[in-house]
Image (cartoon, rainbow, N blue to C red; front, side, top):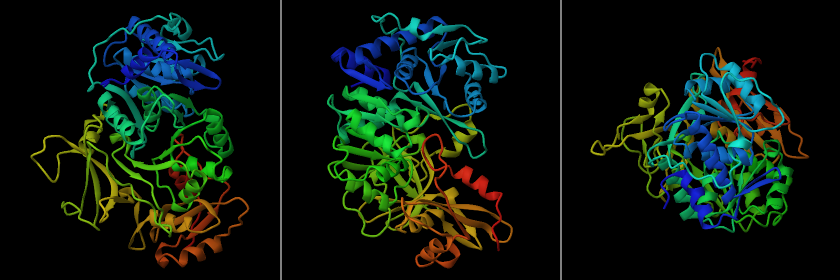
Length: 528
């Protein structure tokens, strides 16, 4: 059993170095090649002064070189900090400076851009992957990736590490507008990966997809589960990630057996690939990150009748902590539960009065277990707000994580997800869950996607605007959607306005970009 993430690829290489490990855009590496390349990256970083515990930013598009860099950083005893290659360089520079990166793995053009934006902080070295954008004018020494990885017999430098050391830091949006760095250890990640291997299964015959970008926590399962099972992982190029027809072709061309993504990507997929049996290689489809509307989930189940479906839940700060194997779906449009705690994790809900929520009662979900983060980088106050003493058993010494998510315990032991504390709004004196409105929106047969957004209103406190995307061939109007919702919701929950859009904006992780919608809608008038 491996206790370090980078040992997974070394163990796979030792077992069979000729097995294909990773593919992307026509390039591939075997486990032997990936192990040697990551050893070369590690040695180049160490030779340039990177030491145990340092942070190394990875700022580049998906590629086989990116995967080698991930393992190489950890073999150097450092932790990797993925930076969104499609985000504004200023945000990437903010992340890199915040965690005082010791080194940068990037392409020449991106390295030059981010180095010039990092005021007052200069990394010790940049490892540059040639993409034709060079040469780069940098304030620090540079090492060519091709030179660093030229020795195909390069050995692991053997930096002492233990499972409690940091493996990576993922930066997520902060409520204050400043990104926060979630610190995750080797143990945090492997607790989830090992569970998934035991529950869903993995072997050399499997072909995993990597849909999520590296800076999104969903990427953790794809990379490390594949290495654990000595399977192949195929990286979905960014330019194909949100085109349904391209995803269908990718799955069939790569013969993907295990798929993992946000539900939004699967919704796009089934809009274009909708014939039962048209994705025959899939044996397991795993989704997380947002609610999967039951109507769309029913479509997925129809398209891949041979595959097991898994709804898994967990914030970035905890990896995955609950799961629900999808069986029969509700006949109506009630959403499926997030399920129950993964083995070796504990979850419980706490009501506003501090008591544990019983069956049928709502409360905030707390998480306890080995997958819970170490804290937020350089932010003890933020950490103390969410990593707290156990509120229901003071005899247990470990801290638990407050998720901010509202749940309700069902009689069968599963939890229903009710929404975020910060998605509960007050309008005209009523407490409203936006998720309940969205569930009613999705019940309309002509709706492909829909969200409910709250915007400030001088008289009501908050006004609700619905944004909907029609199914192919459907024609929707504001009046029709309002009439549909009026039959299902109290009058105070019916949106003040409905906008019919061609597409919903998305974040770099594939989720609906609610902040962009809210910002754009605030500039528009909602009548009283």
